[in-house]
Image (cartoon, rainbow, N blue to C red; front, side, top):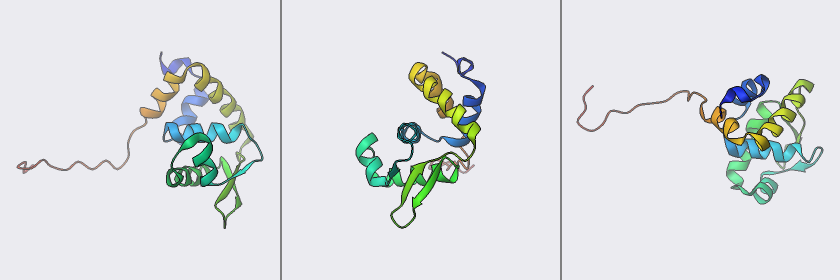
Length: 126
């Protein structure tokens, strides 16, 4: 299965807004419970991930305008994409992840890695 089996807006959205499968799972989980206010502890329990990782994913999703801070003191968020067009893309993404999971994963993992540092091997003076 190739990525051309996915809607073009989904293929464009993924590298821009999703860094990992974990982040995608959290985003889709939050999308299914609109209006629900969650913390990293909640995310750690439900989709089952480490609280520290959940906290980072929530902050990333907020920075990408997919979540809103509901209570900054508690680190609480709710699903609320800034742009209405994002909602349509997320509907197609959720469908694609259910029907063509491998193609979605392929797009996420084909994202270029920025700031890669290559260290020389021992004895390699180049």
